[in-house]
Image (cartoon, rainbow over all chains, first blue to last red; front, side, top):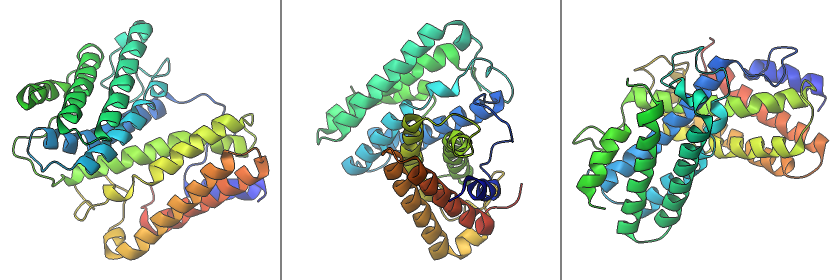
Length: 152
Length: 152
């Protein structure tokens, strides 16, 4: 397919970039992106939490499927915090993120590691191990939110 | 870890469900979820589009990485359209989605298939094949948006 044709279709598909755009991303685009990934994490984390708390019947296969998704999403967040994206749309991200980049990255890494462990545990059949790995992942969430997320 | 302890941590992690909640999801939660996944798709699709259009240098590895993400995300959308989520928050999803469920699902399947093919093509080294698969995926986007997405 010729690029011009592809471009025309993309325009109507609604994903097209402005003409002449470069790799630079608008702060609001990054903000909406990272909020989207957090929404997707919460979407999956919520029923896992309900299972852990006994509010929903335990379903190891569903728990594992959601844990694998969370592990995937955990890898997608960091690029949603480029310099300059501390403002430009409504955001709960504190400016401290860009003042303590190394620490923020370390906390993100801890979340990635914990959710990878969670996905691994969930893929097995040990319910208690799944619950413990879930709690550790929630701790990693909390550790970062306490320092870098503004209260709603 | 004891469930009570895990629950306490989750509460502060901000992911906790309301007490007594069941598997039922609020319409606004589903709307925000699916919009989040679409944002994540657009985040990855935009630089791929820029590469296809020659607005950004071609990078097969980056193109492949993003194509794999889009293929993953394509699998996550359908559950974001539960019955009753045609309203409850700002949404561009037309009510026709819930009146033509079979057709909507078929279009979603077409997007899943096209993006799987795109990820496969992108994992190779054939730039033209990658571009063609990208155009087919964009066609699948367009086909669904034309019918089921309200104009901004």
